[in-house]
Image (cartoon, rainbow, N blue to C red; front, side, top):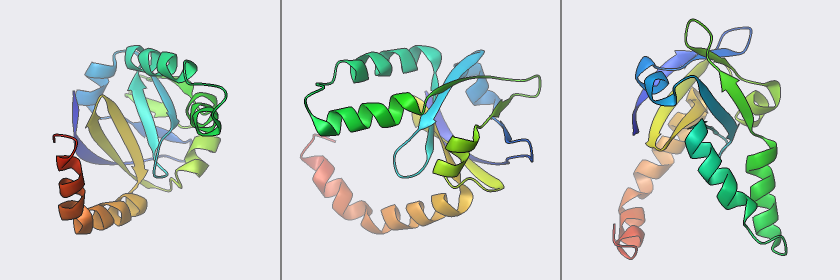
Length: 143
């Protein structure tokens, strides 16, 4: 399980170090893709395989299903770790998530989210203001 929040720097060659705790869970290979809310998702290869299978089974006749599958699958790229535990973030993903220099790496149970620090702080502030309303809505789902 991925939990916690870490701040790292992305270097001029678009390499980003992944926290050692997370690397242990990811093993040697992972998949990075566009996420929701303008962040990136980083999945262990096995977890990505399960998600990709579910996405491939979405109905082609539904525009939302096609769009979501395209967002996730066409943006995906397998990444390997270098000797220093860094991954390369491709330009198209770096641009999608507005990644600048300071990056927040957040563990969210079965995935890792990669955020530009400024975008993360804005998102976090917004959610913190709405947490009571969100909790009320989640109560209906049994949370």
